[in-house]
Picture 1: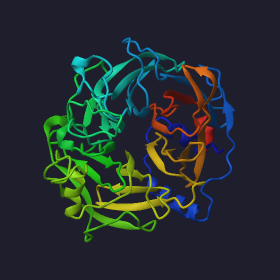
Picture 2: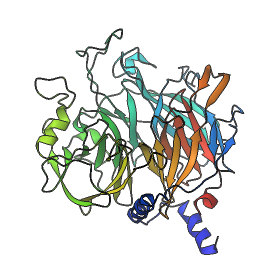
Picture 3: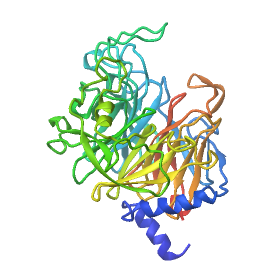
Picture 4: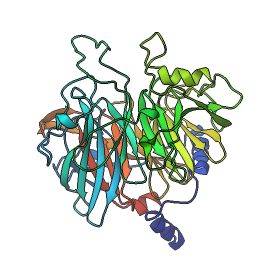
Length: 457
């Protein structure tokens, strides 16, 4: 590797890259068409520093430690909830890194943590806060952050050190559950909540962000605009414009993306196509259903009737270099996934990649941009082994990790083959040296460190 190249990588691991990923994605699209998107890439079994078990396959030289397993007793004496999902680094200092992690627990059931602080005493989901030792990667402290919510899937960090957690559901006390389940919920669900890393605080939704099947959010740190995704077979991309930056509860309009000149835009489009876009208003963001129905499409249908664009399961969302990137997990002709970009300054949108081969990429879900510029992609498919990739600056999609969680003897109370369980919550330390990510079931968080500079070269 040349000295200039090494110096570039060294700087990019410390500072967010200034180049746009759009040219990268264009190269990736061309490479994928030639079936060259995933070159041979050797992974090796690597033992977990905590359990000693080979739970992951990684490139040679990378190491990791697991912590925060489901059922472990946290610092506040509460058992760690299950179904680890979206997550982000929200604070750092010289010795520790603080994360907030979602728990995607569905239906109803007693809230964990202090019931008097829960949004809904019968909401089973919420978030936990984790403080990790930067040097050893050991868990120093963990506690409930919020509770009493339902199906907290993804979300996104704010520039001011909090986490926005999203409920991927629209459900209320009036809804009937499939037997033998019983609905004991006491409040409406389908909201976004702002979460502080401090110990268990009262949880109240940001109602103007809408009541729908939320997935992820990304904030434009220049304008304060919040972009929101929706995880349904028919879904939209939304934006929330708060009246006061850094005060999301101050209120503001919710809008849905629309392609100019098209009344019924469908995301099944050829790769590389660019569209001019605008935004249409959602007049009643707290409407959970279309009038006279229980369809959970109250917000979506308002926008669609005004020409809002329709996508297939909009999940991952990340803001980088004046661009919003979002993934459509079942988008495209073969329903294997798409990656889109939206440029707010130009008000344009482009389909930059569509998978046509499950061996290359199979149903992208969570995404995150490494400080050096590469895009991390977590798969969530029906394949027997779930994978994690990086889209590199040269346009190649490189396999980075495979889930190899096989517990032949009870580990933290679990036994079985969990290789098909999804990756979730990818997030990086600010210097890019540590990747944090979850395996949703049995529920564990992983800190990965290694020769990033050489691997990205």
